[in-house]
Amino acid sequence: MKRDPVLLPPTLAPRGLTRDEAAAYLGIGATLFDDLVKAGALPAARKLRGAVRWDRLEVDAAFEKLPRNGPEPARDPPPDDPWSRPRA
Image 1: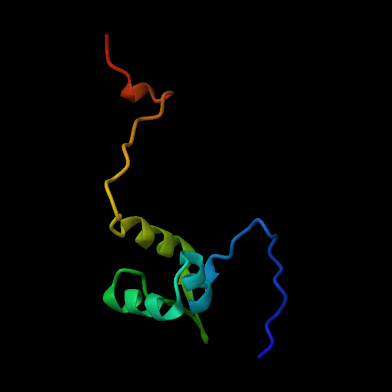
Image 2 (image 1 turned 180 degrees about the vertical axis):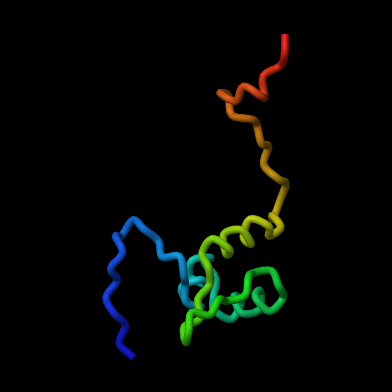
């Protein structure tokens, strides 16, 4: 089946990803992607009539929740955050 040409500018990522695109977006294979979806570590697809797509923002949020392979990085408040400054 021939797909229509992409009309998005190259700097704008699509919101809906195919299974293969979502797996590639995470840098993993489609089989591992399927396993992670089945286990609930990644979101289920959404249906757009006959099309099945993964929401890139939901994939991002799920990826943020995955465990790290090492300690959490230190999170210093931004230097210009007035709420992080000590009171006098």
